[in-house]
Structure formats: structure tokens, C-alpha cells
Length: 484
Ligand code: ADP
Image 1: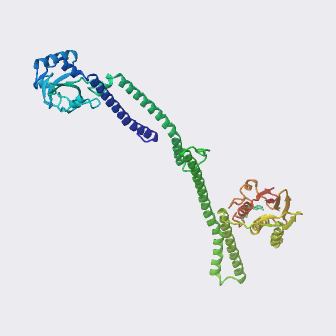
Image 2 (image 1 turned 30 degrees about the horizontal axis):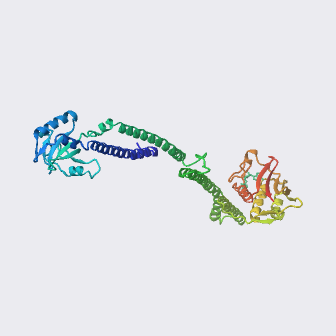
Image 3 (image 1 turned 90 degrees about the vertical axis):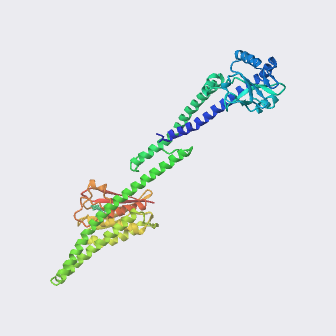
């Protein structure tokens, strides 16, 4: 039932208004009753006096003149029905009554209020015991009889007598007040409901957004709620905090999922990549172990050389994997310095010169004049160039050419490694820099598809662009552009 804030607020409103309205009605009735009584008593202030003046001998020597009293009672019954008269002794004993004796609820009343009335010291209304009931009180008029030896006690007709409803229905003023109160309650209630609806609308929107967020598994494709530019109240601030929180959680979850996906890929790829050289290594070592006595010295030499090459490859693989994961975790700190890149290029080319000659490939360095210095981490850029030249030599047949070229551009230095090798098919070019990606031109090479991925991370760390151009099957060109 009251499961929404809106319903609860309305309940609170009702719970506040019902007792307030009841207290108000009760107070109004009480005060109007007192007012009526006061008025009646004041109007009839001298009623008893005038009755005594008309019948001066009602009480003689502390005894009631029965005939005079019954004449008076009859006269009153005709002129003023509802008014009861009694003759009391000074102590309050009832010695004469206009009502049948059987109707009396008591034989004596407390005379104190009568004395107060006669002294006229207290403000009206003054109430005294009603002889007709054993505990009720009524307004009255009274006069001394027989020189103060007794009282004529007149119980006045009380217009406020009867039920609450009759009192309200009987009074135009009260009816008006009640109508007014009713209309006011309806108005305030109606306005309250509208105000609560408006106030809780944003909360409902926020709650809906949160539920949607949960249903979407805490992943946001589009923002659920916009940011409030100038927050006005707690709800606005809550909305802003929620929007921030939701996008942060969503981003982190996406990141975690991505990392988890990469981790799975890494584990499966690593285990696959390590298994091949490990199996080869173990195979050669076991053969050496088992057939050692029968193997010739040159065979042993060959087996050992192969095992050594496999273990070297394993080492490189592990080191590449380790580096790549450090790049991915942003754990690589570059040590930048302004450096003439051509010097580094000369060193790298020199390093590969023998290998290129052995393969029958012409490895050349071409430097444009006035090359600017660039801010680089020497070790990392050497590694990237090494990867690119190594790849170029790997994919270029004997008689081919590999050229490392440094060109000055406007605000940039362009480094390109061009070869006349197999080229890279169009469909592979987009993925060539992804880790573990090996193009379809790969013919049983022992690469793991990590070199270009590492080169790309290095370029990114330097704010440099890296891309490939290729006119398959007529070689390819890997380019790096450094801003200067
Ligand atoms: P790998 O260690 O396997 O060579 P890389 O990330 O260095 O891994 O290269 C990814 C793939 O890109 C290679 O498998 C190869 O197919 C292709 N590739 C890279 N450089 C060249 C090149 N110069 N010519 C032709 N193909 C190349």
C-alpha cells in the first residue's frame, strides 16, 4: 500500500491534519458552547429576581408556599417551557420543584455556585448541579428567598444541549465555520498532493534510472540522466553524483571485462606460443640424452645448437610478453631526451648489416639533410626500429632491398622502413599492429605476432603516429612520424 514516498507523504499529511482538524472542531464547539451559555445566563441574569418579585411569598419561615409555587410553575410552563424552577434551603436542600418528585436525580445540590452567582463576582457562565441528574451541571439564575433563608433556583434552557451534530446543525455560524474548515482541508490536501507529486517526480526519475542501470548489469551505453548544471537542492546533487557514479562504474566494469578478455587471450596464446619452442627444446635434449652414445660429435653439436636457438626464442618470447603487459599496465616509464635520431638509425643499420649481407639483401640508410632532433627514449626507439628492420629482412627474399629513410617534414620527422619483400595483404593491414596478429603471408616463421604491437605502444608513448603502406606483392613500408 504505502510503498512509495509520495503515498507516505500523503499519509503523513492526513495523519497531521485529522488530529489538528479534530482539535480545532472540538475547541470551536467548546468555545461556542461556553459563549451560548454565557449569553443565556447573562440574558436571564434577573429572571429569578423578577419571578421572586412577582411571587414574593414563595418561602415563608423556611417553608414553601405550595400554591404560590405551583402557580408560578404553571405560568412558567406556558411562557418559558424548558425552564425548571426549584426552591432550595440555604444549605441547598430541594424543598420545592417544578418537576415531578420522581424525576429528581438528587435531593440537594451544592449551593456554592449560587452564592457566587448572587455575589456577581465571577464571570459567566457559572454552572451548578442539575437536580434532574446525579452528576450533571447546568447554567442557572437564582434569587434569595425569605430574606436569605433559601433560594429560588432556576435551571435555564440550554440551547447547546444535545449531540455535537445537532449543535453544529443548529448554528449557522458553526455551520459556516465547519464548511470553511472542510474547504480549507480539501484545498490544503489537494495542494499538498500536487506539491508532493512535483517534489517526488525527480526522485522517481532517479529511481527509474537506477533500476535501469541495475537491469543493464551496471553497464551504460548512453547516459541515463543528464548532469544538472546548477544543482538547486539535494535531489539535483544526488542526480549528479549518481550520473558520475554510474559512468565511473560502467567504465571500470568495461575496463575489467576488457582486461579479463585480454588476460584469457594472453593465457591461451602464451601457453600456445611457449609450448612449441618448449616441445622442440625438450625433444632435442631428450634425443641427446637417450642417444648420446650413438650420436656423432657433429650431430651432437647440431642438436645442441637447435636446442640453444629454441631456448633463445623462448627467452625472447617471454621478454616480449612481459614488456607488452607492462605497456598495457602503463608501467613503462619513458626517459625522454632530445636526440639526433639519425645517429640511432646508423647504429641500428650497422647492427643488421652482417645479417642482411648473409641473406643477400641490400640494407641501406638514407638521411635527408638538416634533420631536426626529436625527444625520444633511446632504448625504446632502438627497439622499435630493430623490430621494423628485423621484420623487413625477414619478409624480403635474397636480392631484395631494405631501406631506412629519415625525412624532414613540416613540424615532424618521418622515419620509414621500406622493403621489397612479400608485402602485406590489404585485409591484414588493419590488424597488423594487434598483438598476436600474424598476417596471412606468414609462412611458418617463428614470430609470435608481438613485435609490431610493442612498436605501436612505443610510438604511442612518444605521441608518434605509426602506420603501414604496402603494394602487395611488391614490398611494404612502415612509417613513424615524430612531432618536433
Ligand atoms: P612477428 O614477430 O610474428 O613478426 P610482428 O608483430 O612483428 O610479429 O608482425 C606481425 C605480422 O605482420 C607478421 O606475422 C607478418 O605477417 C606481418 N609483417 C610485419 N612486417 C612485415 C613486412 N615488412 N613485410 C611483410 N609482412 C610483415
